[in-house]
Length: 617
Image (tube, one colour):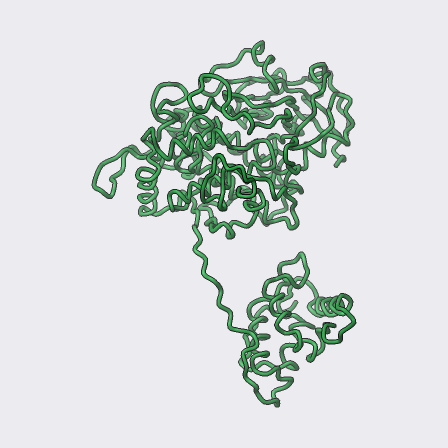
């Protein structure tokens, strides 16, 4: 194995140094350096033009390298060369500096040659980039927490009705994109815009850390900065903590009990509430869902302009396995959005509509949820963490394909401004703009306080199967309601996997939680320790929007073609082929258990079991 230690020689020569950068690269430590060098040299021989002679690039020839030194250096430093999927093969700065010095000292062949100093390649002067660092909220200093709170108070005015905070809520409520390829990227643009307003990097709350699902950990539950009642503003005034007290839309929360975003009481009470441990334990389920999403090879079905997100043939109980599993099991964003919905539903009734929060600067669809957990602000920190995880996924796979030109309305100028009624589509920030590495958008994520549940270096395919869902578009199927009852759909066969399928899903005004259990379950508690609990689907409501008493504001943003949500029930195969399922539907903002006769009339609420071949791609 080659040594990666290398001191830049003060007076490099071709014979002693530069030739070996091409023929025996010292930094290659995961394969044979000489074999890699031979490959580079042969490839340039094969792909260089045969004439004129000076354009035929021979990396083993001093004369050829000297003649083409500037373009060779530029391609190597920009990493357009070598063409490789292994980032360890790119030239390190020590190798590049050796080449630069050699050129500027006159391309000496040996130590006996004289120097001919000239600036062929200028000294590297990297442009300085001002990057915002989004830190783990648990690692914020007291000074950073103070600045954050004052930004929420003084700039977003989270306790005022006619405020940027209220406008942010409506922006999300009326324009956000869900259940489609643009989901991750629209929300990335949204969060970036919030940071432009506040000139402050919104922190993230790592609900994906292994510690976050452990009730015995100090990291579990809502971070304390979202629970404090008051803080002292720099003006000397004692104020309510904006991370806890942020107005809902129009100053009325979902339950009508307060002007502020509402969280579940057990999250406010913490460990003193007997329900708190079970609530925290739900994160173990979410962790498995995220791990399963990260294991998918492809990001999404590509999004066209004016066409359904995914054009998948109709399915029925006799639908060929080869048509459905591709969409059900191989896309990151559908699986990822489902666990995103679950996180928001975990917080409280206001949180569940779309989501916006002071801490995260993301508002619930029709309610601004407060700073972090209340609904709005807590939503923002959750959204930040989802963006962090999505970035990990996006950067670990080269050559991902996106509908790059799809406009993310109403964001313009790389999501630094808004244009609500701009008819010139080319002005809008695009999906491709937001698919770039975060550094291109001037922000980075700091390391989490506690390690993630699944480290990126681990083999993702070993992750536990998720009970989260993926969303796919299905054309209307006239016999969809004619599917047989769960217990009659398919017979268990070796090599087949059970899925709970919810078809015909479309936009709703209110938010509901659907918990799925094995039929004849001993307990209907939706907690991970319940061995009969399959999983949860959260149906986020889109809210009424700007003053409407009914209907959904700006319904054009909703996916026109109904989608299908899938829950992987692999671990329950034996029970399901004998017993079937039970589902409990709860209206989130009231906590009301919805009667079966009611939810069966609602689109996309009835789960059905389908057995699909494990081997089908």
